[in-house]
Each structure stands twice: as C-alpha cells, then as structure tokens.
Image (cartoon, rainbow, N blue to C red; front, side, top):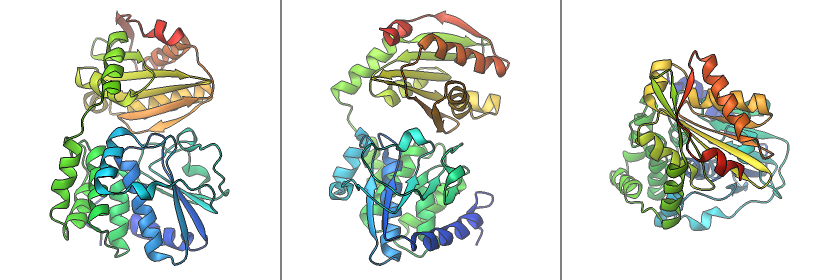
Amino acid sequence: MNYLGDTGVGELTKLARKLVDTLRNYSSICFCTHRDADPDAVASVLGAKFMTESLISNVRAGVIFPEGVNRVATKILKSLGFEKDLTTATSCDLIVYVDASSKSQVFVPGVESGRDYVVIDHHETNELAENALLSIHLKGMASASEIIALMLEILSLKPDTRLATLLITGILYDTKNLRLAKPSTFRALYYLTESCSECFNEALSLMTSTEVDRSEKIAVLKGISRTGLYELNKDFILALTCVGAHEASVLKTLIASGADVAIAISLRSGETRVYVRASQKIIEVLKSPIASDLVTYMARELGGSGGGHEGAAGLLLNYEANVNELLRLVKQFFARQGMKVSVLEEGRWVDKCSS
C-alpha cells in the first residue's frame, strides 16, 4: 500500500514490523528524546510508548526527557492532561531514541541504560544511527510524530483523542503549521483525524494560543541587541548572537526579521552550545541542508557532537570554546560554499560570549 509515493512508506511498513519484533526481546524499555523537548519530540516519544504498551504485554516502558520539555510542550501537555506520563525512567534494557540525532542531545547523567538502542528519527543527519540495533531514519518525512502516526496505522492501532491531538501538535510544530509539510504529513493527519474530527482544531488552538513569558521576552531582546550582522556574497544575511537561554526563540525572531542564517552561541559551565537556523530561501538557492551541514562541519573540526535538519541544527562541545575560533570556522564553512563573509555590523556578541 504505497500511498505516499517516494516518502518511504514501503520501507516504513517493514521497519515498523521489525521494530515490534525487536521490542519483544526486552522486558524494560526507555523512550528518550533530545534535550529541551519540543512538541514533536514529546508527542513522538509518548506515541512510541503507547505503541509498545499496546502490542507487548507486561513490558515496563518509561520516558526520558533530558533537561525537561520546552515552554510550548509544557503548556500542551498540561492542557491535554499528560503530566502523569512524564515520570523519568532510571533504568532499562533497551533505549529507543526518538526525534534525536546526536549523542549530545540524549546524554542523561545518572540514568542507567543497556548498550542496545533503537533510533526513530527524521533529521537530515543522524550520528546515533550508525551503531543502533535498529535504525528507522526517514529524513524524507517532516516530523517524528508523523512517523509514529503512520506506524500506528500500519500496526492497526488507534490512539485515543488525547494522544491523537498531541501527535497533531507535534506535526504542526515541526512543519511550521504545515508550511513544511510532506505527502506523509497529510497521510498521518488523515489517519489521526478520521475518527477524531475535532482533534485538528484543538491542536491548532493549542499551537496558536501560547503566551510568551517575561524571561523569554528578555532573552529575545538581549539576543537581538547583541547581534552581529554579516553578508554572504552580498546575497544573504548572516546573524550571530550570544545568549544564555531561549535560543530557539531568539533564532526564530532573527530569521523572521530577515536573516538568512542565524547562529546563537551559548557558553555554559564547561560546555558550549551552538544553534543554527537557515531560511527556506538560502536552502532552496544553495540546494543544500545548510544548518545540518554547518554543525556537522564544526563538530568534526572541534571534536563535538551535532546534527539536525536542513533549516535547524545544533552542536554541543564539552568545553568552553573560543568564540573567535567559532567565527573562523563559520567563515571557512561558507568559503567552501563559494561565499565570502563580510562584516555589516560587528555587534556585541563576541564581547558577551567572551566575558
């Protein structure tokens, strides 16, 4: 039943059945996603947990959300009554990484897990996939939630109203309210809504009524005030800033304000995090997954761990990096793309990251 053309449904059917066969070999399973989990990460983790508990009797299934869940996901989970489902697991025989693409995203100090793990993901690159017991890495799909929804359909499992709504919010979040949707997205939405016509409207309402708290407003304003602006061959605008929190919101604002590539650097005690966003315009013009390629290049040069999508990616270094070295690598990366980086406005980001 290849109803999705080239998006990999035939492959997914085989993998879904292989996944169930794999899971049956373990009595305790943890489902883990990336740090600061967003709605797609949370929904796909809970969807995978539901799938496992529905098909395998007497299995002990738990969840792991490294560094918790983000503000948007917290509100959605509370509205749908999922708070009791978030108790963190502390040990398991098998770990299933969902919507996570790199080791740095899933490390959880103090959580004991077995050596075996499975990957379910849709990011452009995935460094976890190489050593996975089973890898369901379908980068042709727009969200992890739609992968889970399609596996539920393949396995003839119907989520209840709450879970269907949660999975829809995950899809809406990662597709930017369907602007980045793929054929698989609409098939997944059809399955989730055919017995729950009100679920889509509820999910849309939850996604569009989120209030921004004071700390996030301050972080965004600080990030903008420190931003350095650069030109890429006089064709595109690169924005770099230094922030300590709410990096995703800062980058979203910079891209919405006209930046084609936005980078936020966050230096914390003993580590450095680099977050990258790229506009659809530069991705289409260069025909390249800019964000994931940039963090992959920096990770290779600096000995870190990183990955992500063509338009959104992240890097983790287990030390406090020299920001001038980071800037040098950014310039070097774009030089390899045939693009010269020229200063428009230095900004205060280097000073703030160095202080």
